[in-house]
Length: 265
Image 1 (spheres, helix red, strand yellow):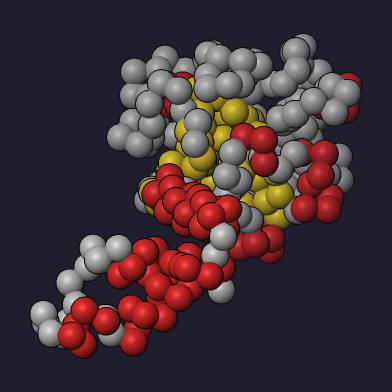
Image 2 (cartoon, rainbow, N blue to C red):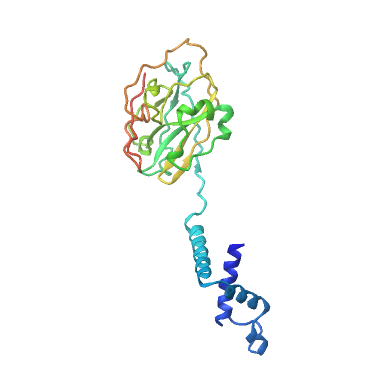
């Protein structure tokens, strides 16, 4: 209602000052203005000078908001589907970790030097409920996995996945057994708490939010119990840990703590 009154006031100001042409021509009736113009003029004249100034400020503020705060552009959906390597690999899937193929040349057309790539890990039955965070400050944390059923980890510079990056071909999810010692610092690549199954996707984040994402992987089921390969050994690191097995990530945007470690075997 306030916005309507402001619009009426602006239109009334034009009618009151003779800035607009009357639709009735140059006759006496046209000089009086139409009933609508007279109503608008009445609205404007009924306001005090302070009310007029406040109304104009609200109108201009609303116009500025519409110009500078347009809805965010949805991220580009890339056809790449993350997957566990199909070839034989020691410890490929354990009771708390699994290996992923490192995507190569997938993000080159959608990322620049200031962007980072994240891995989203979700319980398979909760992946549909995941919503891309609008900023790094809203990234879901590993420690909240039991309640949110998803988290983001393995933050790395987009250049880590470039065609020319001389990095190992494997990422290991869940290999950082020291996550509990970080004092709440995140992101964390901690051990997975149950067999799952899990689904994962890669998400490119720019300084202003998500820019591109891959499709979700097929469900990944971990081994039950403690049989098979053991949980990888403790990985020395500082807080937070970035991508394991993907080279180094530089300080980007407003987040200078991004760091990279090395993978376990």
